[in-house]
Image (cartoon, rainbow, N blue to C red; front, top):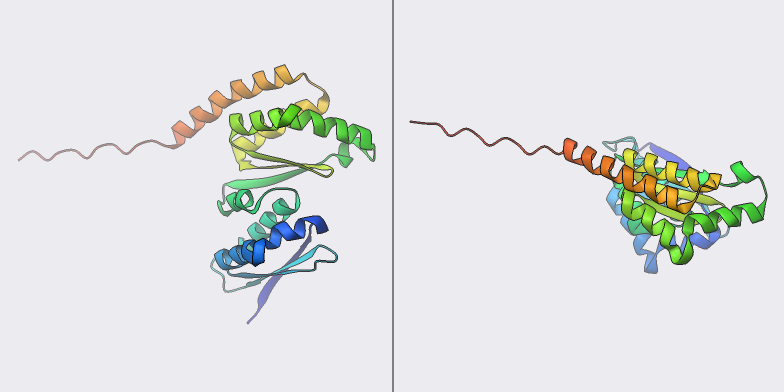
Length: 196
């Protein structure tokens, strides 16, 4: 039997979340995707093995994204959204923007989280995406249109735009997101009744 093997790494402090109570989270991932997940609890290295006879070769990549999402602060339940092929994971590394300036990174994380988590909650409610602020990263899980709006709102906050203008942007985009969903979902026309 030949295998596909892919490796990734997550923070050591997130390994317990990946494994779950009595191994339940890890076991759920393995059973849903027919993969083997091996975790090095000392280094955070994760190896994912998949049988090449798997009907979908992208499965192992989706498992990797789920593990990365858990490593970036998402719960396993939220990471499972990545089961859907239309849902994507994006990670913004604040070190790419601010270098090693810890004070700038902390300031921007605070702006994105907001007082008592209000800003992050508003972003999630208005876009339908999930947002995690963890370490030096901001991560997003969502469908492409949700992801793009969320990323733009986060970019605005990183640039220093006022929260009020970001909320206004999100409210405007929310209408577009709802309209796009309605256009995608068209109810089937009723079948004509045969007259005899």
